[in-house]
Image (cartoon, rainbow, N blue to C red):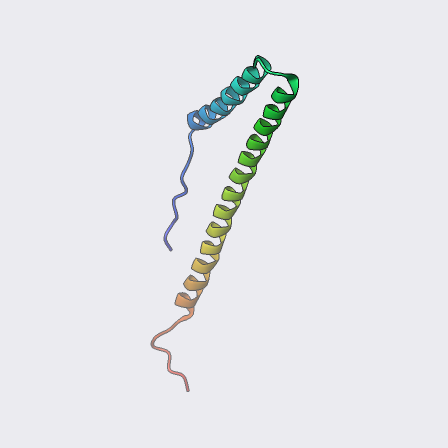
Length: 95
C-alpha cells in the first residue's frame, strides 16, 4: 500500500499568516477610525469590512472541509481496492 505524504505547514508560515491577518484588519480599523467622514459612512464601511472578514473565514472553512472529504473518500476507495486485490486469487478454480 502506498503511503500518502501530507503537506506540512511550518510554525513560521502559521505565524506569518496570523500576523498578516492581524495587521491588515488592524490597519483597516485604524483607517476607518481616522477617516474624515460622517459617522454613518464609517459605520457602513466597518460593516462591509466585517462582512468581508467573516466571508473569508467561512470560505476557508468550506475549502478545508471539501479537501478533507476528498481525502477520506480517496482513503475509502483505496481500502476497497486493496481488499479486492487481496481477496482475488487468480489461480482459484470455481466449481
